[in-house]
Image 1: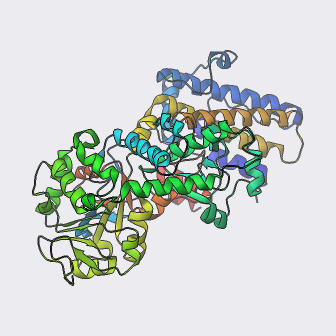
Image 2: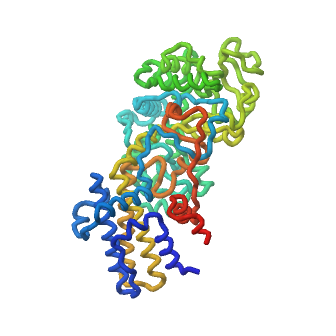
Image 3: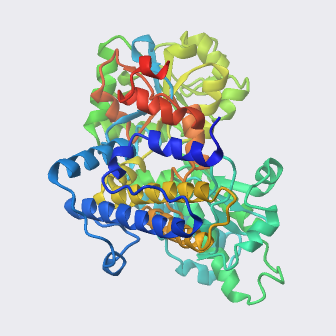
Length: 571
């Protein structure tokens, strides 16, 4: 049996990048007095190597400046050693650039077995410009003032596109906007009250007796902002809350205004925005849809690749359908504009509008025709008809499409993807527009080299803790505190490159976000745009990477990389 210290050392030596750090490795000291100097020297050597490789790439380590590097020892690595180290870093940290046009795989998906392709409309087939978020914000703000009698001065508020991200949670009890991870743990550095970070994160810890949010609290007091429409909502919640906070110095102690009121009112305003408000406009939808249709070039982006992709599916004998919550009049005008054709319905076998997802998947609400007479019973799908309402059970019955032979694309995991995946076994594809910008950031040399140093620092921390092994090494606690402080600084830097307030849509510091975990669990594939599917043959099979449990990762990574032969491992 290996002791804890020897086991930790064994794991470090077994890690694929061990050759990276072999060039200047000193023998590990056995006496306690020499351990801290040994670790400091090892830290300096590793940092010098990382800094050298960053400079060779024209990059920098975001958490460090020139002064941090002046004391480092010189690195006397020859060209072959540099090449080997660079290769090891790329293998260890996955430095190969990712394309924003890639399709990413959570679960095996064989397109040869897919017979029917389905699509949502908003943010799936329809690409909206950034102007839409500004318009949503202004409309919601004006409804609060004009209809719910909020202070008129709020009309001076303006949308900040750089503030919020998708997938945040709003605590309607405390007025906190935050990001949580896949275990429902709060990323404390993202907790905001209004537009400002919370002054004392201990208030959050005290509320939840730690950083974990219980399922009951999550269900009753947390409002998740999941789709791209919710980004202006998150910004408005914070802006209005900031106004009341600034207007009431005793806000925290004397709750004359309650955040739940605001959350309810913004939700009511959003419903008004999306629903019809007069008989004349009943067929189109709410104020938002009317505004979009009034100037489609301002809000919608044409993309011929979508049409070509749909036509390609049809030409290869695949069935297609459109399933959306929007009204037919809105979809009809929008699709005519996007496809530059009045015959856009020829791209689909079935068109379902006003579906009321996710209720579409859970109820037995019958289908109705959108054409007259609308009261005739629908018990089958007829060519050329457009249907509204309906339910998943009848859709499967009338279309003959069910199970894993259906692949459905949508942008909202809760209203589009979870229920058909769970109830019918549909294959699902998530369309996540933010992927493009996040992948671009992750591909930058600065980000990659900073991440590589963070991971190396964490391994040094693990090694330093294992060395102690109960010996109470003099000076080690101070060294560990210093390294942990640097780790916090690096993680904050890596957060800020995506979004200053909330970081990445997909990751807290080391875990997937609550939002990303839902995508991983309920989307077989995900990508930034439907048209990216054109890059794959119609019979392509998406194979996911092997997922490793922590106890599997070290040894199986070695085997997969070919560095250790299986025969040798079995001895």
